[in-house]
Each structure stands twice: as C-alpha cells, then as structure tokens.
Image 1 (cartoon, rainbow, N blue to C red):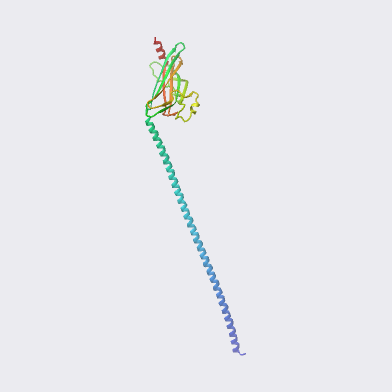
Image 2 (image 1 turned 30 degrees about the horizontal axis):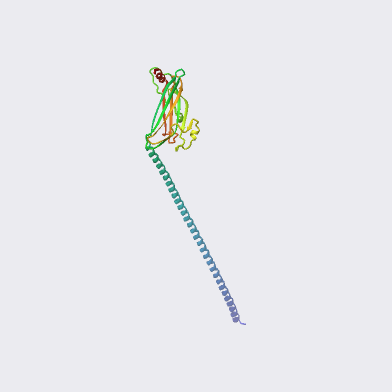
Length: 290
C-alpha cells in the first residue's frame, strides 16, 4: 500500500471519527439544550411560583388589613350605637325624673298652705294641798288646700319644766320651747324640760304609709284613733287631750303634738304644734275665783 492510500485511509478514518464526534457533540448539545430548556422552565416555574406566593402573601396581608379595618369600623359603630343607647337611656331617665319632679311640684302647688293648725292649752288648780292641776290640750287641723290629705300619724309629748336658775332683778331671758323628742330635736335655754309621757296613733288603713315597722318598734303608738284620718278639702280633724299634773307652783307644763301628713316620717310634711305655760297663773287664777 502506497503512502497516498494510507493517507486517504487515515483521512477517512479521521473523518469518520470527526463525524462521530460531531454527531456525539450534536447529541450532547441537544441534550444540553434539553437540560437547559428544562432548567429554564424550572426556573420560570419557580419564579412564577414565588411570584404567586408573594402575590398571595400580599393579598393575604391586604385581606387581613381590610378585615381589621372592617372590625375596627364595626367596633366603632357598636360603640357609637352603645353610646347613643346610653345617652338615650340617660336622657330618658332624666326626662322621667324631671317629669316626676314636675308632677310633685304641681301636687305641692295644689297643697300650698294646705294646713291650718289651731291649738291651745288650759291648766287650772284642782287641789292646792297636793299641788294637783287638771288641764286640756286642744288641736285642730283644717285642710285649706284643694286636694285631700291624710293625717297618717300623730304623737303627743308632755313635759314639765323648771327654770335653770332664778332671774335677777331687771333681767330678761328668752324662754326655750320644749323638745320634739320624736324628731330628735331639743332647744337649750333657761327652762330644763323633762319628758313625762308620750302617746301616739297611726292610721289603720293608711294609703300613704309604706309599712308600720316604725310604729311597731315604738310601744307608745296605737293603731287607729287620735285624729288620724283622711281629710277632704275644706274638712278638718281635731283632738282633745285632758291631762293631770302634780307639780310645784314654780313648774312649767307643756304639750307637744307632732303630725305626719301623707305618710311622711320626716321633712316638710311633718308639722309641730306646741303650747306651754307657767303654773303660777293657774294658782293666781284659782285663788281669785270666789
């Protein structure tokens, strides 16, 4: 075999190898392209996935934000509604209170100057040897208002008094009224008053007294009697209380009547009528009588 034949053989062989290499390289390139395309697709898919996740997260955040805003708005509306209801309730209560007060004022207006109390005390010497006196206390209640009233209860307190000290010549002292023990009231002064007895009455079928516990806890009260009654406009109630006194001629005698009108136990509907006198005029009057 000559040199030229060897060379051609070598060239053919080299060409086949080159061609095979090219084919292999082409296959490798195709495989690489496929891999690259798969990688690109995967990267794109991941990119789209992460982009979608970010969008989802963004939407979730936005949704949560809107939900929070809606909740806050609902809470504000509820608070506003609740406040309005509270305000309406307060206004309603205030209106009811004012209406009640107006009715009370109107009722009081019909009863302005509704009572006229008349009272008097009289004492006379009965037995000088034992310093015995007899007396009487008179009380009358006239209803001068336009509405009926109820004399719900009345209590009578009797007192004896003594001067705290003798008066010097050319002196003057104010005489203090007897106490009102039922009301817990007392006036200090020149006369020392000593309670002798208490007797009270309360209306049996009262429509104004809430209960009778107050009177049941005080044994000097009796149910019914003692001028307790309903008094129509223009009508009156009265009571006459006789009494006996045994005391020295320098003593004072007093009767205090305390009345509760329309169920009142204290306040402006509780009225006081009291009278007192020195026993010496009774001695003088009896001595002068033939």
